[in-house]
Length: 457
Image (cartoon, rainbow, N blue to C red; front, side, top):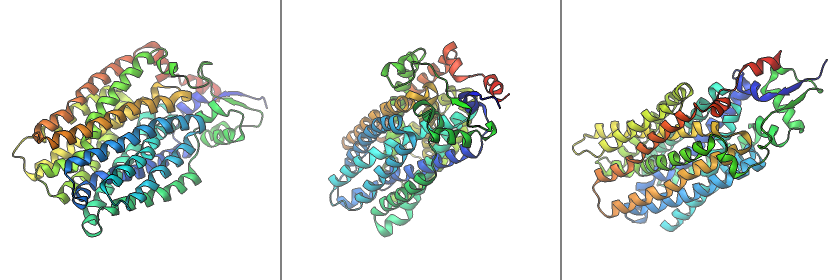
């Protein structure tokens, strides 16, 4: 039998979803489900924490902001780890890095301890996201790429909703510590599941260890229809300049426009979504709901986000970043409307659910599209730096809202500040959509399926 020279890139991009891809997607969804547990534990426990330590609500701005400082550090640090050592070890380490501080938070004896442990937990939370995005972007067939990433973030929203249910029903009986116990134990157990079952990214191994037996074994699992023989030569062709990370690669070709637009979009979007989600439970209490009603509304909003994220993910696969313009516009309208006086409790919940769902869908849509703008060898860094821009904004936004609340600024004005940046996101997404018409961008986004058919012949 004649040995074949096989470029697996087109084959991976144009195949149907098989067991290997389904396993990677399932573990990606579960990874962000557990990540959502820890991320929202402090948000839904905020009211009880404030009461327990006898501090003003505005003091939670420090907790939220320092958590995002940790998330920023983790996003950049684990993006580098993922590109250097692999998506798999980076994900396992990231889950452990937030699970241990979550468990330690239960021992906090002062409000300052809460701030410290949330900073440390943030490092792991931030480290998981860019590597999940990179792993799923590289595992998904081209036509399902955005859907894969955004389906994983449905898991994230489910985690947010579930931990809110835990808070609503168990904090009154067991105290605020229960949410951190659940988040920490879930993370520790799931890190073992990842160590046992999570496969490495095939494109990553092709770029870094093309001669390793592990690479060939993963190719057999990912592309069983190849019927790979020992004599076949397997590779993933890419430009010779893309052999190692360099910052200039983020600005080569059409990326000299795409990268700044992505950075602007992530920064502005986080000023809205991260700030709104951090303060949502306390904002709803200020609007007139009880602590339990506000926590349950947070849960309903997260369930609403699951639906919005999935619908928008499919829309982006067909319409590109323009789909995000619609969700961003809905988020702006609903968040501002939440500040209108005279709303009934039922209307407050309904508006909050739609506003949070639209803001979450916008946030996850950027996570869904960012990986496609970067080649494999720089994808972890490209995603990590772009999402890191959002983490910088997340440090600023919650702290400013804490200042505004302390200054007794009316709730409606606070909500206008939170909502307005999503208008910038809408404008940036229009630019990203138009950029896809660039001939070089088309070559990346619309790689011909004919290459795959030729190699399979």
